Image (cartoon, rainbow, N blue to C red; front, side):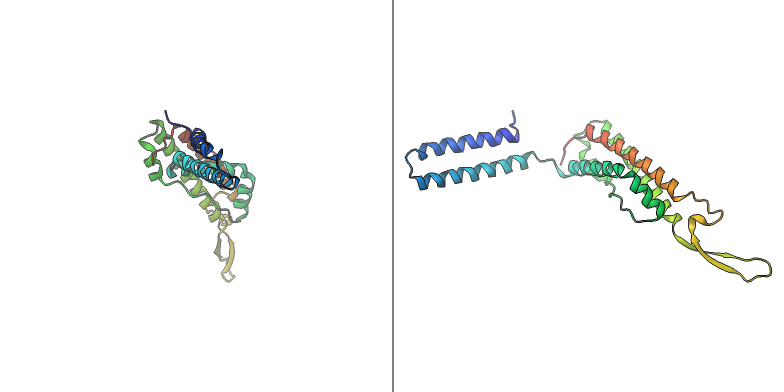
Length: 198
């Protein structure tokens, strides 16, 4: 059976200290200190090696990391909606490329790719709605002409243009927040079905 990182470290430390103990009993105090230092250094190196051997591969780390970002975004939902409603900048986490999911497909449960597709569709919706929210805040020139008066041009937000067909920035922001929740739920399901292929 494979040893866990902690078990590997303990085993290595026992071997090192056991072999050192035979020499410590007859060694001078200065040599004793040096041997103990060497044993401690080797044990630390063994710990690092054990954790490296058990570290999760990059594709799986990327999925888990992005899920954490989505959960943080949901926790900041109020600021997210306010920022988009006011036309303030708000940076979205980068979407996970579908190739990342494909690298994990072979060692994951069959439901994994279904959840990945649900995530991709939901997060695409997030990005589209954020673009629409920002579009409503873009300034455009509107030209009007009244009888007997010269043509008048005014600068307004696109969302305020009559018959623009756009909803308000706040509505798009709230819908985007709902899609973020959907993406987070789908990605959480994907993590449960996920393997750890490199």
